[in-house]
Image 1: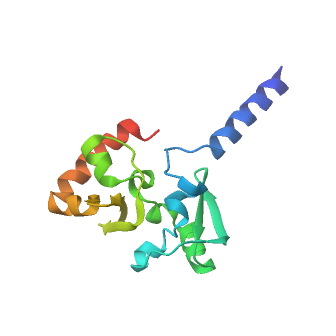
Image 2: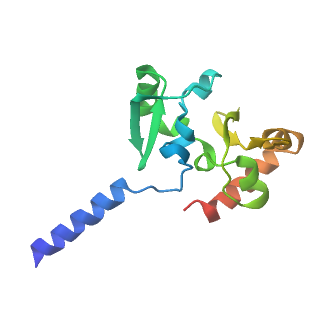
Length: 148
C-alpha cells in the first residue's frame, strides 16, 4: 500500500514538473513562433535555430546562438514574454488570446510585450496611441482569468 502511494505521489510530482503553469502561445511548436526571446532585449528580434533550444515551464524556446540560450537559462523569468506571448492589446481590451507578429513588440519596464499586426491592425500602434500603462494594468487583470 505504501509503495503504491509513493508511486502515485512520484507520478503526480513528475506530471506537475513537466506541465505548463500558464498557456503559452506556441504557434509552430515553440514559444514566440521560434523567435529568440533574449534577442528582443538586444533590440533585434531574431529567429532561433534548431540546435539552440531549451524547454522551460513545459514549453520549447529556440535561440539564435549558445550565448542567448545560456542567458535565458541563467534568468528565464527576465525574458519570458508577458501574457504567454499572446497579443498584449487583445488581452487588455478583449480578454482574448490572439496570435502575434513576432516582429511587432515593445520592451516596457524590462518586460517583453508582443502584438498582432496584419493589414491596418497594428495593435502596437493602438497600444501606444491609447494609454499603455492603463492597458497594461487591464491586461494584467484579464490575464489572471484567462492564463490557463
